Image (cartoon, rainbow, N blue to C red; front, side):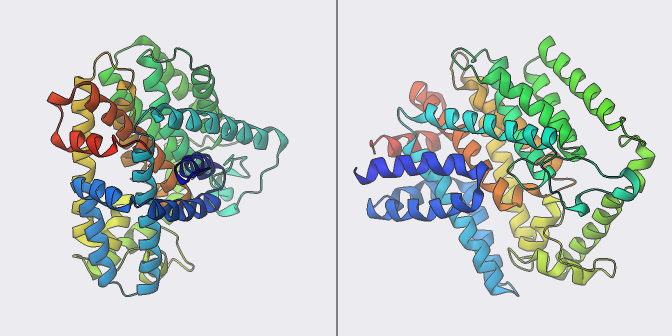
Length: 412
């Protein structure tokens, strides 16, 4: 078997493992990078990064933050993680850009089915060993929160919502022909989201669906939103206390704990507002900026404060530029791609980004390595759709996408 086929098979495996077992997926990325170097493809991948101004600005802000970091070892480890994620994403785009672009969606779809079924298995068998700190047991008692292979209910909820945005978009664009898993996956994901008890995850879905409703004003979508709201409220009302009650939410220790973390993150940012204290260092510093935090806090529970604390104003500006530019680009692609089978990916990306930004007000799960690598799969799916449209209608698209498509034209 030649190196090209080995790389393709390895990417298939990494895509599935990114959800099932992320540590093995990262190991797979290392092997994929070795194959990339052996095939002398690193130059092409780097040129793709350079053409993406938003991603390049993020990379530069991370580099500056690393140089200014107080904990150089932690920042260097985070740098390696970032390099792995970006390299994996652009390798996916390059390799799947030809006839294989639909394979990525199929792998993600089958993996989603497995992960959801495993989550339901956890629920019905009681084979759940959750961490007590996930739930305010004083207020709510012991809740059965499923997390499937993602290790945490909130991370699982983040994964679910990203999938729902793409799958529901595909369904509403009438691209379900031959996709027998599409409707079952939407149902499975919706049920699993309720079973995570993730209020942030549900609110992010609601925000995403309202955005989708602005583009696709269909009764089916209105009905789906209404059913999900009813399911969420009823399920959270089954216990002794109504977990959706505003008074209860206000008294929830998980929320008061978040407020303390946010205060600490603001103090971290003010300590070094330009470059931040260094990427990958927030977990080490947060507890030292509050007399109410007595242990390490993995992240700031807010993506904006997380970025500001670690990368400063430079990183926050780069993140905003990347997000806004990609949203504008995907919006243009959606309007331009009428009649294309890839159109669903653009609205899916817009809505999933909306969900991440909304969920990011209360949590920073997108920065957890297990969810970050999952996101790269869907970002690549969106970029592959963009490359496909560039081939179909190249004259009206930006030169950026045309150049990427030309670079990807070489068959691996």
